[in-house]
Amino acid sequence: MSDCFILLSAGNSKRFKSKINKQFISYKNRPLFEHSLKTAIDSNLFKKILLVSNKKINYKNIKVIKGGKERHNSTQNALNYLKNKKIKNVFIHDSARPNLSLKLLKKLKNQLKVNSAVVPYINSENSVKYKNKKKINNLDRDKVLLTQTPQCFNFKELLNLYKTNKAKITDEASLYLNNNKKIKFILGDKKNFKITTIDDLKYLNSENYYGIGFDVHRLIKNKTLYLGGVKIPFHSGLKGHSDGDVILHAIIDALLGAMRKNDIGTLFPSYSNKFKNIRSKNMLPPVLKFLNDNNYSINNIDINLICENPKVSKIRKRIIKSLSKLLSIKRNLINLKGKTVEKLGIIGKEQAIACEVICSLSK
Ligand code: ZN
Image (cartoon, rainbow, N blue to C red; front, side):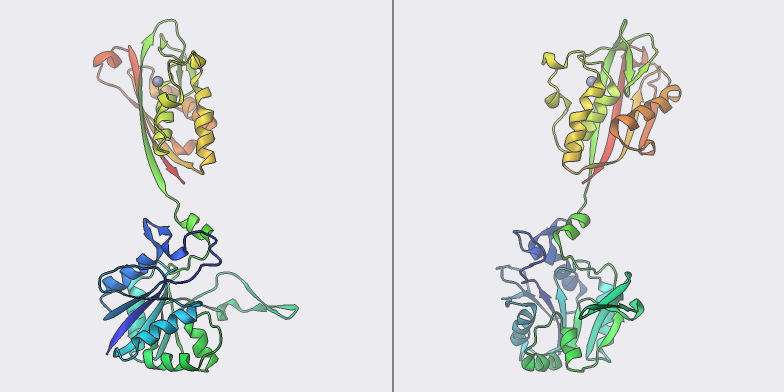
């Protein structure tokens, strides 16, 4: 006699509102249903694993069963298949709960030794009201159980209950309660939440991206030096099509890099007269617009300014203040470090200034 894990993955996801069925949508780089499937396989707790799905899927050692119209029809199909397969207990799990843990599986299995029905639950963190006809009443939230899956049952007992069931049930625990059968409720796992709407997924799927930028410009006499959008009193300024602001150029490249949008040269071709003598701070708005339009946000920016002079310690505060304003982010998200080069090369001779930047974005 062995245990079977049944993964329900045939729902039509009415509440999900997406063209792709919820269980096949990508969550952390793999289809939603695969997460708990992998946990069940890796647990080595099951002799048999059934995947209830209306899509043809091939997995080694996994039996795929066609789903029904509603959840309870799908469960019924799986149970029918298991008849005469010498199954002791079944674990029925929703594929919309991808964060099933081995710990919870083991806890459930342990409880099945002395109970014929074990269901995990968590308490409500929200205050709960209950609508009865037109009156809304308070419920004691400490007495509210929010049930999760896997819900685990003695196979034969569940099969018998299903035989006589005509009601539309949303989980097997309801079936047990409708028939006044005893369930052992055990504390589940908050992380074992259910993904119901596409917004749940968007929130969970927020991803980080990193970008790197580098720039160097020659210093020439009779030009004003701009760094990070700040006018700096200095013996020379940076040569270039624009004001040569190496910090802003490297930041723009880092941001474009993180968004996978080529480079500053693509956005501002230096051959175009339109950008001649442009102040670099005026190159930022189109980049920031793209960033906002595509729901990116800046996590942090780290800058290395590579020069002998001016001394970074003397200009750091002003530059960070300026960048914070130009990028509309808090000052504590920006770091500026100074790096000298032991008087080596043209940077060491104060004939050029270089800058490198790394940034992190969230989407
Ligand atoms: Zn540049």
